[in-house]
Amino acid sequence: RTAVEITTEALERIQALEPKLHSFLHVTADYALETARQVDDKIAAGETIGLLAGIPVGIKDNMCTQGIPTTCGSRILENFVPPYESSVTQKLKTAGVVMVGKTNLDEFAMGSSTENSGYQVTANPWDTSRVPGGSSGGSAAAVAAEECVVALGSDTGGSIRQPASLCGVVGMKPTYGLVSRYGLVAYASSLDQIGPFARTVEDAAILLGAIAGYDPKDSTSLNVEIPNYWKLLQPNFAPRGRLRIGVIKETFGGGLDSEVEEKVKTAIEMLQYLGAEIQIVSCPTFGYGLPAYYIIAPSEASANLARYDAVKYGIRTEKADNLVSMYKATRAQGFGTEVKRRIMLGTYALSAGYYDAYYLKAQKVRTLIKQDFEAAFEKVDVLVCPTSPTTAFKAGEKTDDPLSMYLSDLMTIPVNLAGLPAISVPCGFDSQKLPIGLQLIGKALREDLLLQVAHAYE
Ligand code: GLN
Image (cartoon, rainbow, N blue to C red; front, side, top):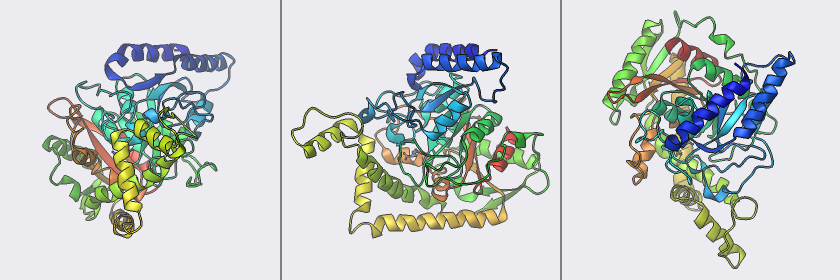
C-alpha cells in the first residue's frame, strides 16, 4: 500500500474514534497527507526509503513542532506555535515518518491519568469509562486504538510505561541521555526522557533506533554508539543459559492488585520456561522512591515553570495593571490545580531553611536507590516487576486524592531516579478484560537486552 493510503486509513480511524477517545489535541491531517505524498514520490522515483517512512505516528504535545501548536496540555500555552523543531521530531521528519497529530497529556506531564489536561480527558480504548493512564495517555490510547502505528511519549516518573500498561501496548523509557531532550518542554530535567509506544516490541525497537543518539543541543546527551536494536531481535533471542532475571521482592507487597500479581507471576514463569534463571532480589530503598520523587520532581518543575511569565510564551491576561500583577494573574489563570500544587511544593522544598531537610535529603535517597540497583545488577542482568499496581481505574476515581494518584507510579519512579532503561510489555488481562503490564528494567544502555527479552516473551 502507498503511504497516502496508510495515512488516509489512520486519519479515517481518528475521525471515527476521536469523539469517544479524545487522544489527540491537534490532528495534522493536511500536513500528514503532504508528508505521505512526498514519501510516495520518493518511492516512485526509485529512491530507497527507511523502515519508518510513510508510517503514521502520534507525538505527545510536549514536544515542539515548528509551525504546529504545542500546548503541553496547558491553557497557558494555548496560543504557542514553536518557531523550532525538537530534535526527536526532526529525526522522524528526516526519516519520512508521517505525523498525524499531537496527543493529549496531563498538563506539563504532571499526572497519571491524563485527567489533568487543560483541554480534554482521554478515554481508555478498552473501556471508555476508564482512564488511559498518564501522563502520555493520548499517545498510549492512540496506539492501542490503532489511530496511529507508533507514538512518542515522555517519561519522568512512569509516564510512558504506566499508560502503556493500562492500554495494553509496549512502552519504553530509555536510559537518561540516550534520546535528546532538545525541544521537549521541561518538567523535571534530571528525570525526563522521551521514548516509544508501539503495539509490538519490534516496532518499539525501530522507533527507538530512529530517535536515539548524540545531540550537541542537549548537554546531558550521551555520546554513545547506537546499536541496530531491530536487527538484534533477529533471529528471535532465546534467553537460554546465562540470562539471570531478578524479581524485585519489594514490589509484591501491599497495594498490589491480586490479579495483577497473578499475571505478572505467570509471566515470570514464562521467562523461566524460555530459559532464564530467576532469582528473588531485594531493593530495600525502592519504597522511598515515591517520596523522594515528589520532592525532586516538583523542585525542578518549580524552576522550569518560572519561564511562563506572560512575556516570552503563551497567554497574557488582560486583567492586570502592572508587571507583577500581570505575572500573577496570568499564572493563576493559565495553570491548572495540579501544576500549582507542584510549583508550591517545589518552591517550598527549595526555600532557604527547608532545602537541607527536604531537597538535600531526597537527593541522598536518590543515591541510595541507585546503589540498590547497582547491587542488584551485580547478581542479575534484568530486573522484573509489575509496571503498575492496578489496571485502568475509572475516570474521576482518583482526581480528588492526589496521594492515591501518585501511588500509580510506585514501581516506575525508582527507574527514573536511577536513570535506567525500562520497558512495559503486555502480559495478559484481568477478569474485567483490562490489560496488565510487565516491567523489565535494565542496566544503563542495555536497551538492546531489554528489547530482546521483551520480544522473546511477547
Ligand atoms: N505521574 C508522575 C507525575 O505526576 C509521573 C509523570 C511523568 O512521568 N511525566 O509526576
